[in-house]
Length: 250
Image (cartoon, rainbow, N blue to C red; front, side, top):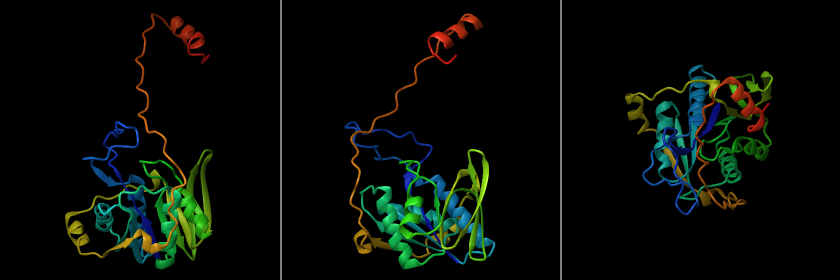
């Protein structure tokens, strides 16, 4: 069974994002970049499935700039077998465009499963997995907290407001993963060295024939308002009065 795992290069989650002075976007100059945390979880799950003997090949895919090769090498060091970079240059593609590119890659690679992080921490769109499933006309199981593959089916436990929901979908399928699915491993030094010798193919965006024309226009990017300072009250009675008369929550 072949698994396709899309990964994205994003601002490291420990870094505080800065907005450009002209408010056209986020400043990425001299900023530490790393693999999207949800994608680390999807890579880890694919590797675990391979260790169980369920999966035979893991193909990591990224749609982005040439620097995304570093992100793909991280996926290879974690256990992916080979990688594909779709060179999109400096262009930040919309979720629908990314889904169309992934659809073209699925047509070439013919995987049985696509395992993808539920969202990227930069755009927080939570859309690529669902759009890809719709474009492929494949079953989808989102927000997975447990995954079992076998017998041509995927059994996925997902978190919902009322508790846990278990789905069974036919393969091929698209699965998006949530935080509680697993804890990604750290790549060991020997595996990092081995990753340098694993195949990493680079495809140009235009070669896939996907329509990536933007449908959205960003008008302005601003930082969230700074939190105002709190106040002190003399007694519990004063607190109740302020919550009732000023905050309006009682």
